Length: 389
Image (tube, rainbow, N blue to C red):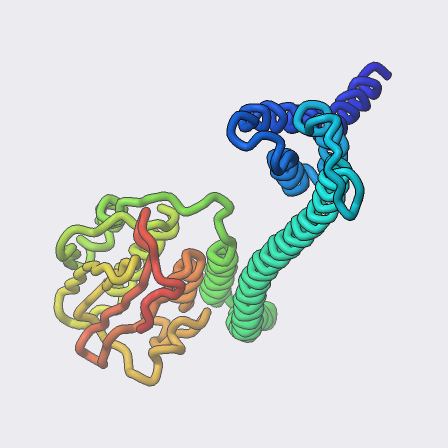
């Protein structure tokens, strides 16, 4: 209750302030006019009052100006005009004519000034409102463009995911049925012939199915995006760890793995980069030619992206298969090479998680291959899209 009364009292004082200023303005005009008496006498008696009323009309409105006019009539008549003059004008005594003329002119001009000031204020308010609306429209347009881009990207990701799911479902169903058919066939033969030698074939088919299921889980996990933002990762250190982990495979094949130059820091999850290097280097060693495997890893930066290259002297790949090899369970070789054709599909999923791309840069049968993939540089601005193959 006390707060309400205080607030009402403050509003009342605020409304009375312009009228207090009117009194102050008339006092100042009176003092200034009295200072001019030795120079001009009582001629043009209300000139300073007229100026004061115009200023009040512009800054405080017509009401305070009208109050100032009434106070000016009283002050000017009492302190400035000479009493007892008998000069007669068409409007009566000269004092009356001066008072009437001042009052009429002051009120009319003050009203016009107040009207003009209010009109200009409304125009400025409308202009500011239009500017605010324009800024809001620009902001909404930018938000709409961002939302449209997000929708386009989501639709693109959904389309790609559906296509991959279709290929995945076909490949998985085909490859999973093969060991099941083998198990069923040889189990029936064992039941009929009671031949224990067929057990090895059944066990081999079961192991292949187990490997397929493990690969399915790896492919699924590669499709799951990390919730935390990608950290800054030293690609050179990750590469050294991968080579150290593949020491057995490298020594067993008599291979050599070298790094050309320093590898930069990139914005990708450490596990994803490690899996990429491991899969590509393992493939280079697995699909080797008669010569000792030689694998070289290099990197170059381009517009905020780092493009890694993995080059080998292995079997090579025909041009017609350069897109097919990234589909899950797509194999170009027979069972003499272990695996289910899931490695490059996992690599593609991992690279897509950071917005990059992977591609077969060059290859030919018997001449080796060069695989490239892109990852964003750590702490740098990058282009909206990764470098195209």
